[in-house]
Structure formats: C-alpha cells, structure tokens
Image (cartoon, rainbow, N blue to C red):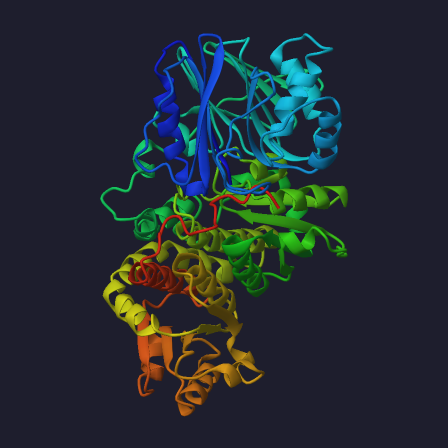
Length: 611
C-alpha cells in the first residue's frame, strides 16, 4: 500500500526527483507523504498529510534522497506519523512498507533504555533499534540493518539512510516489494517497477530475506545472515508510454479501452490457428499436471472472482476438480487436500499479502504452488514453482479492469492446455481447440463491446438514483455478478450485492422494490429459459430490471419490458469477458455521475501488502 522511492547518485538535484517519483506512486493509495535528504552531513526532512497534488519540495537538493507515501495502519493521519522516521539523535532515517507485529514489545524495551518516541507508528521503532545497536556494534550499514531485521516480526520493506554514510542507502525486504533501478552513475529504488520506467528498464527485484547496499556505482545483495547473493537483472517489458493517460481523463478509462490490446498480448504466441495452446511457463510441471486431480485457485477481490470463473471453465473442459478459495480465509482455515492437488494463485500485482501467506502455507503442506501474475519478478512469481504471466501491461487505476479480463483469458488457456496435456496426443483436441480458437476472436468482440458506451452511460443514469443494486448471474456469470457489485462499490461507493440468479426466491426478492433494481446477466446458453423465468418474476413485482445479454439472448428476451444491453456473441465460457467490459464502463460512468475520484477511491490501495 505505502509507496517508497529513493535516489543514490552524484548529482545534487534529487529531492525534487524523488518527489516526482512519489507522485508516480499515488495510485497505490496514501494519506500522507514525506522526503528525507542527506545534506552537508545532516538528515533533513519534510512531511505532510493529504495528497501531494502539485506540491514542490522545500528541501535542499542532495545526492541522496528517499521518500514515502503512507497509508495509515499504526497511528492516525498526522504529520508526526508520516515517514521518514528518525532515531533520537537524527542519525538514521527509515521508510517502511508493512507491519511490525512485535512493535509493542520492542517499543517498551526501547523506552526502558531511554529512547523518546515522537510518533504512534510501528516504523519509528526501527530507527531507534538502529541507534541502540550502534552502541555495541560498529560494522557497515548493511550489516547493521541485518541485525535489526532479525529482531522484527511481520512484513516489511525498508529503506534506511545514515547521516554518517552519505551517498549510500540500504534496503531490506521480508514480504513487501522493493525494486532497484540500474543506471550509469546513479541508482534508484521503489516499491513498484512502474515508478522506475522514466529512468530505466533494467531492474533487480529484491527477494525475501535479502538486503541491498546501494551506492551510485554499485549494488551489493546479501542475505539476512550476511551471505553474499547473486542478483539477476530483469528487463521490464513495459515502457514509459504505457503508464501515461494518453489523453484519457482517467487511468481507469484508458485501461478499459486498452483491453483489445491487453487480451492480444496475453494470448500472443500462445495459441495457434488450430486452437492448440502452448504455455512455456508450465513445461517444468507438465508431468505433474498431467496427473493432477484437484486444483484450488486462490486470490483476493477481483483476482479471486477471475479464479472462480477459471475454476468453472476448468471443470467444463477436464475431469479435474477445481475450486476457488479466498486467500484471507484459507490462511486461517484447516482445509484437507485431496490426492494429487495443486494450488494456483491468481493476482495482478504479485504482492498481495494474503496471497503470499497462502503460498507459504501450501508449501508447508507440501503442495506445489503455481502462479498467474501480471508483474514479472514480483513476490508471487518468485515464490511459486511455475506459472503463467499475463503480459497485460501496467495497471495504474486502483480498480482492476484489464487484468481481470486477461486473467479469465489466461485461465481459459490454462484449461485448454491442461486438457491437451492430459490427452497426450490422443482423443483429439476438439473441445479445447474450439475454446482456443474462440479466444483468438475475443479481442475483436471486446472492441465491439466498447462501442456500447453510450448505452452504458444511459444505464448509469437510470441506476444512479437507486438505494441498492443487486447483480445476478448463473454459472460463470455468478462470479461476474460478484465482480460487478465490487466494481460499483470500489469506484462509485454504491450499495451493491452480487448473487446467484437461482437464489432469487430464496430470500433476495423479498428486499427488492422500485428503489432496489436488478441487473441480470442472461446470455443465450443452456440456462436462458431459467433466466427468462427469473426476469419475469422480477418484472411481475414491478422491480426495475436491466439485462445484459448477447445478441442471441437479446432475441430470446426482446418481448420483455426491460432495458437490454446486447454484447457480441462469444463462446459461452468467455461471455464474462465481454460482459465485464459493460460492468467496468458502468462503474466508471456512475463514478463520474457521483463525482468520485475514479482512479484513487477513498481508503483503497492498488496493492494490499499488509493483512
């Protein structure tokens, strides 16, 4: 959630550069911010509450600077609680993303030793621990940080500066993301690789239990126990143009409109003209997956709903039993794993705290963890045995859009690949090949769906006065109903709920009236007659009902007295992709109508890096 950005170089103009870096991380969510510089042998900082906006820094320019955007966990939103934090002497400056779980015990211990605290945060204890450790230890800064890291329980990504060691900084990671940008003559570090793109595409992803000592000309990686580690350099496959709005009013709208391209990028080189799927990232576990009997997909929020769609598609195509589990629930539940099981983690950022804890848990139970992630080199990518990258490009808006549709497409490809892999060249590929070829047509169908924006805008106006909106769907459209409800809550702060359409008479219809309309996903599939009956039940009770269907479904439902939006006809398992575009546009348009901050909804962050 919190954002970190830092510069270590030889050019004394970098406080303002760090400020711009923090601005590029605004989408992660924050409520305060601050910057520290090492200037003429002293650490100087400025801290503020609220948004950065068009702010300029008042700090003197320096060749060493780092900054932080805070999303409050310990302590209120005050200037004193904003990062960076100092020790009593002002020698050490610390920025931190994560939660220190043994903060209370450490604080009591430090107070007994005479330390004076100026904030309520868990982060400040790290600065005081550094100060305390220097009373008995005089090694270099990276060794000092390794001693401190061993005392901390919880999750953290740390940036540390030492007044007495100019032109250097030390990073430490256990659970929170940190990326180092490599350039000639200076180095950068950030909590998100997108912030580094204006400067470099060559990066090092710091791994868990690793410390990085950074100078303008060098990066040295070591483990928490001071063993030197080899670092691998990754070339980011994004470019700076991808993180600009390109004339759109909001990142969310830009990312919605990018979906024909992002879907093509997800599928590029992975499906041939006969519908056969090739996934190089799964070759290492090909034999394991040939015999797998149970797959538990795991994720949170939008990624979790994509996993629900994927689980249904997989069961339609293969004999594998599949199920979606919310990571935050799984982490504290005792679940049995059937024989020949695999855990598959679905995430956009690859840094979601609940997902990372789930990976550690399944490993402890000797289950193979696989990943489906958008960010190359992210924590999930590092911790899983194998997996598939989305290649959907950077997603800046807090509300996920193009990652969701790419996740469904990727999960459909995985299902095709699993069926083909299990057949081992026998029994034909007809069912999976049909879905594979249908996937290739999906970007065009999405492009056509985007042209429905005027109809969606009209629907947004009709719904904007409701007190509650209930979304309904069957099969793969039930997860879409959940995602639709989430999107409107995230972006428009609207009171919504997603439900299975078959549950209508099991309670929900009793609470519905003219101010609580229904939006029903009703494509032309094997359930169309059942859906039609449910829609008629709603209309018979004068409940405003709006239907999102495909063109074939529109013909079946055209005689009903309700508003209908028709998307292009696609494979029945891929309909959630085109209809998700309608949902995303609806959330966007309602957010505009209600004057919401579209890209940065209140209280939310792009990457949930703490539980």
